[in-house]
Image (tube, rainbow, N blue to C red; front, side, top):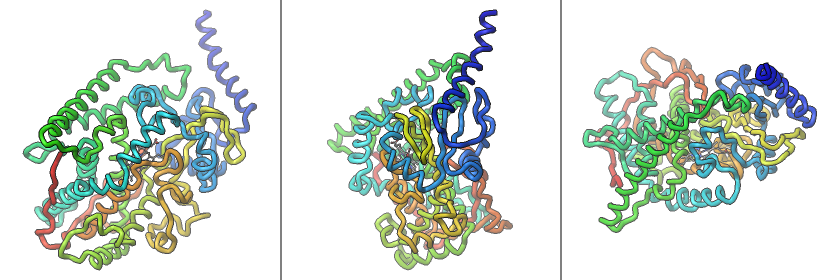
Length: 492
Ligand code: HEM
């Protein structure tokens, strides 16, 4: 009987706490939160679209309750500036779910760390050692090797059966996988037959398992007093950690042996990146997602595709292939990348920031411990700042030189402020180079029987936004056959 009473009084206590909380703070408006679950069941799967719709009714700052956790979503450039610049110091922590806590050893990495001395130290390694212009330049041959390998593979498949469309994602995923793993681990995970080798398979399996473990408790996470009913599978986390350590140790040993043999320290990120291992999925996924969107827009807009190709032919000609060194001379191509990032930011709600104290945004109270999301997808489509915002028109970046790396609050694909993406330049270089190669070396058309405007641009739910329907396209080579050979460089 006593247990039953306790069970019944628990939701009541939670409801009373909610009333107190709402009376004490002047919270941003939002849809009515139901007891216990808040708005969890009202949120549509593609969250950034749902929040943008709600912003039409409630205004550019919203309260959304994930169970008993308050999530504030801002959708205007002015409020984004307040969150990411003016109040950045109070909003630079991260919310860690129980699984994120386990996977990151309670924020001992970069991505899940709260803002503080540990974060500053790891971040410094990131910017000074890993993402410095000098290091990015040293790693350029690896990026170009992988891009030319991708081009060779598309060429092979498209000439083997002419008139047959290809699924672009297949090539992008393989390229991004090899690119990121080579930058990070300093080696290409392939066997003698050219397929992903055992270590590469293990790396992929670990990454997928990490995502599964991270997602498995998503619902229980939002209702803390119900957590006892959803205990963490400690064994699964321990096994996952052990697998990661084993792979890391094996690769480290290879590096040590090689260093002893050659006396040479190659330009990979590996040693310094050991602390950052959980981030790989994010960066690999963001690049694939972005390229996928950019290619879809270019196939939908033959005018833009042709204009990029004219620029490429004028600057590079048709007797050689592009290199990253050509990028400064290809301003229109750079604008295409910017426009793709404006319309299709791969992480439309960025990653949530957490308030480390009570703070005011847009005149509303944001209590300590709340999460704050910037809907960068909505911000970059705001008709108050963008003319015909839904149109894919790279020329807007020719007409006005707009920064996309966190200095202009109208377009924030990489975030801004203390937690701005440290890989932004690398992401931009890679995507610009890839789109350049793909357009210089091929013409791209929709599959036979489909009109360009019929390409479906719906999104799938998820932190990283992919297209719902994989783009299929018909590539036709534009250059002489000898220009489609992979330009391989040393693998370790
Ligand atoms: C097109 C490519 C990319 C996009 C659009 C992108 C976007 C983002 C965004 C929006 C954030 C969250 C910022 C915030 O919370 O305020 C982020 C964080 C991060 N990104 Fe990227 N990213 C890309 C590529 C990369 C690459 C290539 C790397 C590294 C190899 C990388 C590493 C990271 C890391 C480590 C963080 C966490 C930073 C922190 O918490 O302080 N990203 N990225």
